[in-house]
Each structure stands twice: as structure tokens, then as C-alpha cells.
Amino acid sequence: MEALTGVSVALLTIYDMCKAIDKRMVFSDIHLVEKTGGKSGDFKF
Image 1 (spheres, helix red, strand yellow):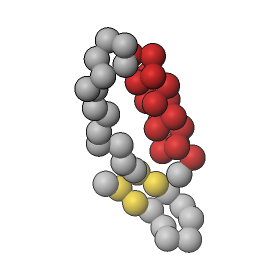
Image 2 (cartoon, helix red, strand yellow):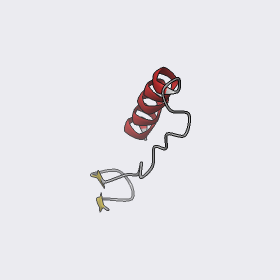
Image 3 (cartoon, one colour):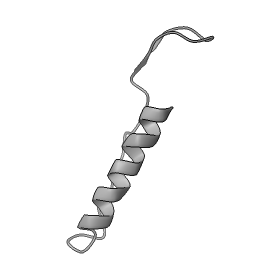
């Protein structure tokens, strides 16, 4: 969860810096790829 939050914040920062060039930029396909451990076990997308 922390990694997804970090990626989203980083992309929003990049968007904020680049919006002067192109206001119609789209960042998509941000999702969990792989997770290990924890109560629910391992996960691979």
C-alpha cells in the first residue's frame, strides 16, 4: 500500500511540473503487481 501511495504522489508531482506543457496528460495502469507475505498470503497480478 505504501508503494502505491508513493508512486501516485510521485506521478502527481511530475504532473504538477509538466502541466504547463500539456494539461491533457493521463497517468494510468497504476496497480499492485506482486505482494508477498501478510495475512492474505502471496499475490501476483
